[in-house]
Length: 502
Image (cartoon, rainbow, N blue to C red; front, side, top):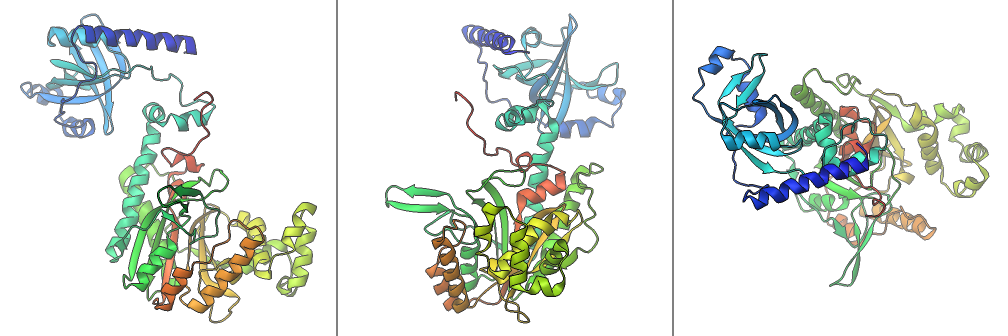
């Protein structure tokens, strides 16, 4: 259907709306309450044969839904309707339906919402149906639904018009449902372990908790610039200081960075903090969270398994330095020598990137090599990458055995980073020094470096118990468990450029 045909259909439907109103009928009625949702009704009646259903002839069922198909045969009409739980057929037969109901059925369009009343039955072909005695129009659809939406080349239109995408492609709704199951599953694990769900500020005077470029907004009454949070970490750890020793937040976060199949400027992060725990405990917790979410999805969707990766075996562990060195092919001595590694690294970079790379510390360089060379080689199976350089981990506790490293891990599954966690730094002197180091980076123009958060340092000075914290990228976890290739597939309304002419 081209634009001119679509416009003609829309105009015809607008004329129907005008005619209905002229005749005293409201095309947008309210107050029709179905007795059952379609999925539950079908499940209840599915096992009954035609004779059993016929014995229910006196039972009047009220159902409602969107019309997705219409088949008319003179004195009979079949309507296929759907709601969020399933589909059902309405059988509108002239001899059974009221005159108003039969006339309305002949005047309906695909996309309309209707309410129907009548007994359950099976047709001659065995299709479970409601024999319509009464029929009302609840919502008149003005625009026609697309005919070939699923194969649409411009997926941005599907993301932008998600309301149509959900109608045309039921599997899109399954991903939305899967996301809800994952969120419930994550909460259930933490609630069972006596974690307290809390809420922390979305706007703050300092963008802290992660090395990321923030969004800036302005409070008019206070004449104050504020940042949308990049992470809730520093506020959650303030709660540890205050004595709430197990807390978590399902936090909406905002980072003013690039858009890709793995990145959306607005995303959901689960962060949880546990006093008297280490990053080893955090590994067990993250592994449990991932497995439980996968199991809950299998329980809901049965044989439909999106994720082909085996999540039941223990997750592998590998040191970041070992992975980076293996990716370079260098010997241990040369890789450990800052000058030798710097020469090797700069030689492999384009000329325009060398000046910035020459400023990196040894730890920063190893991390850059890991991201560039080793991360793409991690494979599909789960792996905890452990023992990160302190230079790139300003909020993590240093390792007792090697202060150049921190007790930190990131979990990769399917080649994507799913979680980040570490034993928390609770030394206020060390934390202040690291904030100062971040301030130096900001002065050099690094917009992702953290600002000095004096109040957070003050909180640590009151004493924070030893603790471990985790951050799980909820969107990426849903991508993994639903087999989605793009983060936009698991966010109902991802950020898009405005439509031309909008």
